[in-house]
Length: 160
Image 1 (cartoon, one colour):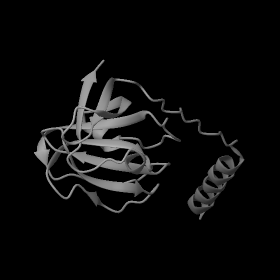
Image 2: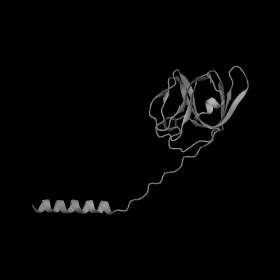
Image 3: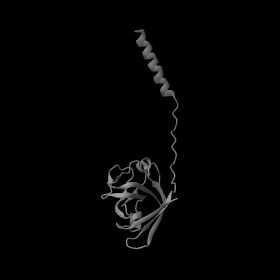
Image 4: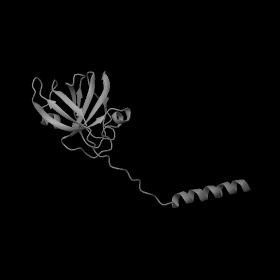
């Protein structure tokens, strides 16, 4: 009986201690865009540049899995270029992504192969490439329509 009383007393003390401990706010750091290269998009069959972008490059496992998650926005002339070791089917989703994106799938010859336009924030639905690709460019939603991008347009990029 004495052991039960002691156990209840200690449990009550621990419970009270936990409830009276002051709550601390968890601070998170803002993830800022880091320019790592330049990317140009060219109209199919021409040398005319449709647009230029400052790009952040995702080429490690961690970077490709995280992408633009936990960011509030991106400037209109910015994008994230995902680089994969070889062409394959790829699928993206918008988990923990706070703003809508156009996802531009690009083959190994650096030609636009397919799109997922206006991908919605926090949507965890699979957004497949539909064909094998080696690169993926994420830009703000609406940019691909605004620029009139189409399958067959090409890209060229340089790293800083």
